[in-house]
Image (cartoon, rainbow, N blue to C red; front, side):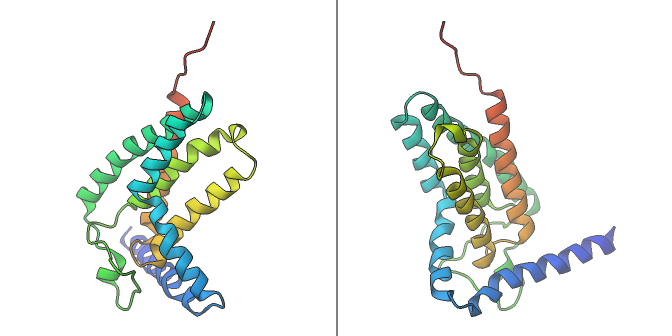
Length: 188
């Protein structure tokens, strides 16, 4: 078991370093750096909560319900995130690995799991699951944003791939559970 865990850590560190440094030498580096430095904030509490509330309060009928589902998924998904961060207290990549590139204000709280990735997936998945309510371009755009937020967390040296993966799973599974258990009253 220890050999397997060691193998996983080595490969996870390699993937993190690749995501964190490799793209620095690409043709569109400036655009990519701006994109990653900006899109990462889409997974923050301010963006996801405000967008959920806007959909809930300004949407009509089923679209409003989707906003409330997003908000519920955000709230519930952060319970396991808080518990896991408290239990594992994993250092962030830039704190543990040499020469990891970071943004201007790196976070210092525990790394595992990624709260930003959890939040963006908890926000996006109710929209994806109710795709028929939105214009055709919303779902692909939403998925691009969600994946970009997850990738940006590695690019900025703030999370390991497993942090991002587990955060995405927590957000997705919570949103799917909300969708499944949400009961909307039907009219007579």
